Length: 373
Ligand SMILES: [Zn+2]
Image 1 (cartoon, rainbow, N blue to C red):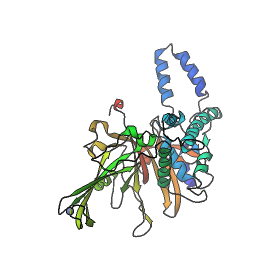
Image 2: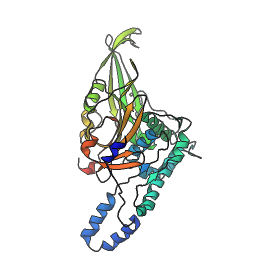
Image 3: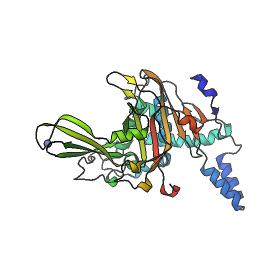
Image 4: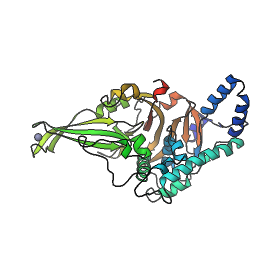
């Protein structure tokens, strides 16, 4: 892996001789000349938040996912401000050590390190010690783990800590609806994808519908060349032989069809590169993905096509084999520049380089309407 870094320019991104605090001061001084003040404001707003994450063992799965998740617009602000404390639960479970508070601390640390190291002209490296401690029961620190499995676990914990245990997702699309107000957690508000699965009996035409909830959308990649193809493939009807039809009460040939009926602002796609059957293996090769994706064409019933352009924010890549390897992340920061994140190392990369990668997990975020999409 060593040679890879030669190609990347390490970023000493806070290399200006002034700290952000001083910059704010000089900005005020310049306010008298309108033009310069505006230029300053733009520069301040676009300052990318860049940091490395320490890896003293096998934590690349954790670090790559953290880089991707923290790069989602609004995520760090929400946790840094501890807005999860505003959620009223009948039985608060945010006492003591929690994932929500740990992530909040981490976001705060990223910001404070930001100021400290700005003077030292270095890339700040964060040690997510508390998070590792919280995880050690589920994810042994002396083993490699699947980044996707960790992501699901993180989302699940962040969600459960801020959700009333008695409230379950509605399964029947007819009787109830997914009302976001009942599910106030940041995860439910921003990451939930809802799928309607319909099973239609070919004989009596009885149909069963049920809703499934995902925080990440798994897409198969076997024989697939692009994400677009995979999403199309996903909603194609599948034949089920020997499915017990509730109409006929016997085994019948049925047709199963999956449809996305709700998309949140964040769409996390997992390309299923790790196959279990017929044998354990990793499916390699480029699955083409786009920087902008129009999800309105995929679930047109529920999504206003004018509000459904999703922008790629981050990808995670697995290097190596199914038996062992290394995770890295690529993130597009506030300044529009792509960065390569490999634990403690961070460097700028070209957009072309990013789209050549064998992505494993992709993070898309819906463009806001005022961005003129
Ligand atoms: Zn039937």
